[in-house]
Image 1 (cartoon, chains in turn green, orange):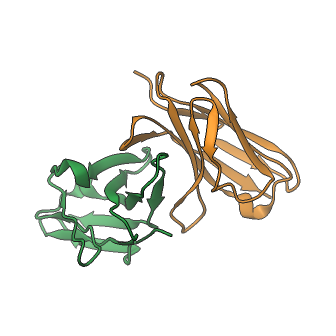
Image 2 (cartoon, rainbow over the protein chains, first blue to last red):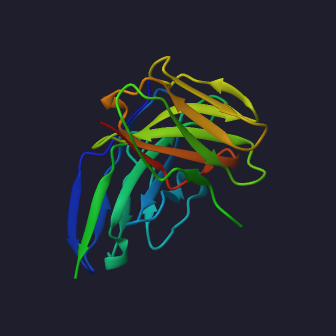
Length: 110
Length: 112
């Protein structure tokens, strides 16, 4: 069965500092990986997805199949990045259901 | 256009009562998902609809949980004889493409 692990419940950095939110997964096939974000009092929304190889709001994530990781990075954190971040994967099959990690609460201090 | 909506936003019920949670997906989205998030946990998949059929119900935790969907529109998640462990935020998501799900604001269910 697939599993997503986010080892940090809380992460606190100062504005302008680099930030890395860790995500490891276990799945025997080739998963599709995602980062979702939930800002305070807003709904959960897609931040970025592996297949698009895009950078959103300065965030990037690289899939490392050898280490089964999909860490989220940003070189210079901003206060508005403070939010709950969830790593998720879609395994094989036709229903495209998401398997989520437990999330990391990022706080960017001024 | 309007996003996914859910009602009620909050529901407090007594143990043993039945509850119905409603999800209105984005118009035209054929896929609909229910997830739940218990305190301190990640989101857990409950059920997937494609149109009005549910090819994957594997996440429903017990036979007290059921869901239906009318066409490619509203879905209702019903929990019978609620228990305290059912307390959670129930999230609905809809999708028109495989790799992007749009989430509703959730229903916070508290069973006392």
